Length: 283
Ligand SMILES: [Zn+2]
Image (tube, rainbow, N blue to C red; front, top):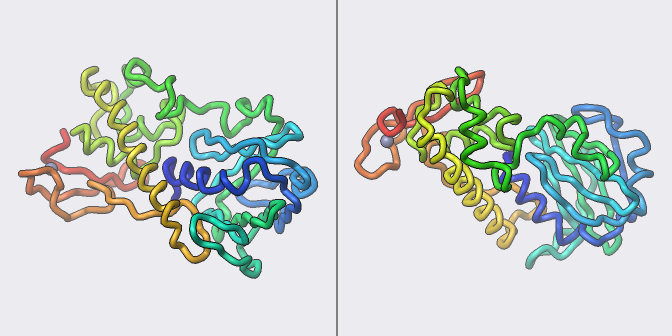
């Protein structure tokens, strides 16, 4: 499932082929993905120039010169494919449309952007750019973890008195937007905090320490995604999925990476999702 760094990588990959370009033709092959697609979506996109691509949490916001913004969420398995354009050193020919190619944007200049989603948990909508922050998908979101509004004081304030496990608190999109399971596991490992510890019972000093760690974990992953864009070896032009080495995520039963620690990484299930942690390093 794509998390914030993967979505940011997709945004950066789309930017050179979309920003400033006109959508010459839009093809919408279904009435819905996870939710109904907007009415007359193809007509509303066709002929629009893309002013820019932004990211809010795990949404890509594509601002159009007609005053609307296309909101894109990749869901569980959504993929953005670029074809027909020179991307890095590689040019990908237009593949034949496939069963799960739900939305296809042909850009003036020949690039084709294809949204492919086998499980259809992805979503797209169109809304007025001026009011997009109030869109129901974005309205309740907390601050961006890499933005200025996310601070030590904010996290201390939002953790105060909370009985929920710290893992759940960091996944709460109202507290901080865009953090997902993988990067929360990695953050808690680096912070030395057990995922089941009550959020409100963690000392202010330790809560404070989490803020730069969250930023570092995300920035490292975004940097890894950026390298994947430079290489761009994927034959089909798929964006956003890249190799990344995790300290704890997916490492159940393997030895902890902390120097001198010989404990095995454990996995517990919290709110239906796996948490990976070191029982020695995380308290
Ligand atoms: Zn350890």
